[in-house]
Amino acid sequence: MRLPVGLHRKGSCGFLLRTITAAFGETFYLCLFTTTLRLLNCFLVQTSFVPDEYWQSLEVAHRMAFNYGYLTWEWTEGLRSHLYPLLFASIYKVLHLLMKDDVQLLIWLPRIVHAFLAALADVKLYSWVKRLDGAEVAKWVYFCQLSSWFTWYCCTRTLTNTMETVLTTFALCYYPMEGTKRGSSLPYLALVALSFTIRPTAIILWVPLLLRHFWKEHQKWRLVLHSCIPVGLITLGSSLIIDRVFFGKWVLVQLNFLKFNVLQNVATFYGSHPWYWYFAQGLPVVLGPHLPFFLHGCFRASEKHRLFLVVVLWTVAVYSTLSHKEFRFIYPVLPICMVFCGHSLNQLEKWRKAAISFLLMANLPLALYTGLVHQRGALDVMGHLQGLCSPPSTQERASIFMLMPCHSTPFYSHVHCPLELRFLQCPPDLTGRTNYLDEADLFYTDPLHWLKGKFSNITLLPTHLVFFSALEQAISPFLVSNRYEKVATFFHTHLPQGRTGSSIYIYERNQEHL
Image (cartoon, rainbow, N blue to C red; front, side):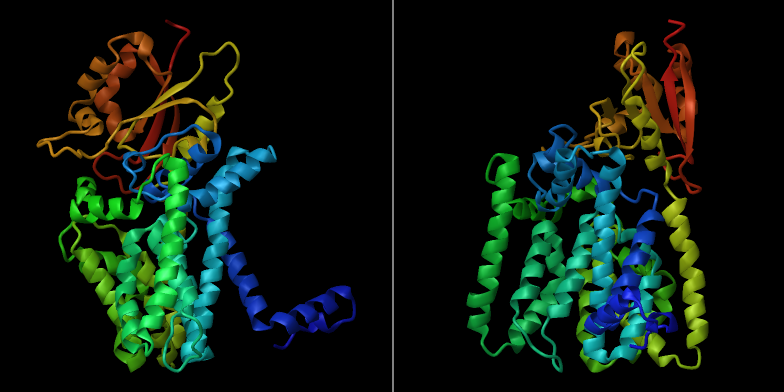
């Protein structure tokens, strides 16, 4: 690679850079640029997406490291593996031992780790396509990957879906394909097994690829006995031991996950969509402005890429059979979709500049708006509550009640002190009762009546109430009669729906006039 003019000058700095370039070449600069971009990406995402990015990762890790916090019903029922939260708990524990467990570090370090993982996955994707289709196609796949608004929005969030996407991209790089140098199957099988251990539904994407590998393999029994079984036993055994330590009993979480979410379909308690939702809305939204290029790439890609198109369609089709649907569930297929988008750009020689301009101008506003504006109140309000951790000695110790749809905000991972925090509970009914209503449903049926009954004894009143602006009018008599005063307002979204509001309010009880 040709060096910039300034790097040809004599001196230790120039010599060092020339040495690094000679050793790493293109890969070094690619890694440096990608890592810088993903770190910028990390700090420009200041909004919340879904509750699981906190409640299935950081909240669990906080409890593992500091012995206080809240665990949702999935953890008491043994549906989730501690393997993923253990990554963050380890970081928290190191910070604690170094006496550097500042709340801002607890919030940002896990996301920075994901930024590095996302950067590595981007570079791996480029290297894989370069090996498969050549440098020119790889360049445009890399561009599409970096310009994707949904990747920008998700790739630094502490979601199991994000880790699944990273592991899937890594595994694809080692998957045996015709026309490429074949190596050991162990690396890709280990990554698939790890992905399955963290999120069991990750196996859906890999079913066509695993079946193809088995079909094409000449030494089938050797593949099964020397690769699949050892990898499976080691990965599953490690997961069992880790969960035994933290659950205090033997639990096969992958089996429980499939039983509750697939066989019993408990996830429908949190919403359901028609079968065609992923095709009509889910995949088009996730692809965003890349959609026409994906469709064009599907028609123009070579025969060897049909396998990956089958993987995308198979994954979306299988997820379509499950009632509970979310955009993030199909995030792992997005890097594969970018391969087809890259092929499209590679063939649009005449219109390429216009296509690149369109993708940048269309994705950038979406990425910035969703990352900096939409649903930011849930995090901003926690920043304010952090200030209640050390009240003046003359002030009553704070107690906070979140009168919001359950899990609307993070919890102890974003305050890092043993405040008295409460929120409206919403566990699903696991006993088969009809007409079941959780605490949140009961509250929203008649908020004022619920509050009066809950706090008939005024000594039980919390010092602070946190709720969406949409609720203010309904509970105004309760606020006035108990001398609550608004102390802070945080913008949340321009698109309030259902029980959410455009803003989040914090009300504090006035103790001076009691």
